Image (tube, rainbow, N blue to C red; front, side):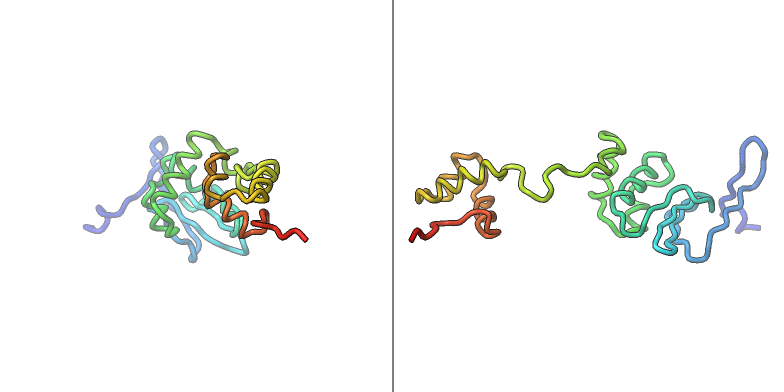
Length: 168
């Protein structure tokens, strides 16, 4: 009976009834009461054997939201998520902070930039191209525009800007 004292048994406080969690065989446990299972392209989060969240296997936004929510609800802690999913502690902390400060919408709204640098918008690119055409150096342009010289080099490499275009 020594092993019985070490085993955690959950009971409903009012009814005194045992809560017997039953998990599918392929469930990976996050902690004593929380597990995760992937089945048919979906990921299911189980609390005491009952599914509480799910998302598609490749949906990172929902994964980040759900794991942050589990932490904020007190169902697990940061280290449980780090150990179960092999993500960095800083990422988990950042996701949790994002949820607590900005809310659920922060995970599901699209960025308005669509893959473009916020400082190199079309009007800025036109100004920079004019200065490059006048043989001004990238360093001096960067200082005038308040951007990094690396941003200009990157735009040149992508072909958004042309350095010393040949005029025939």
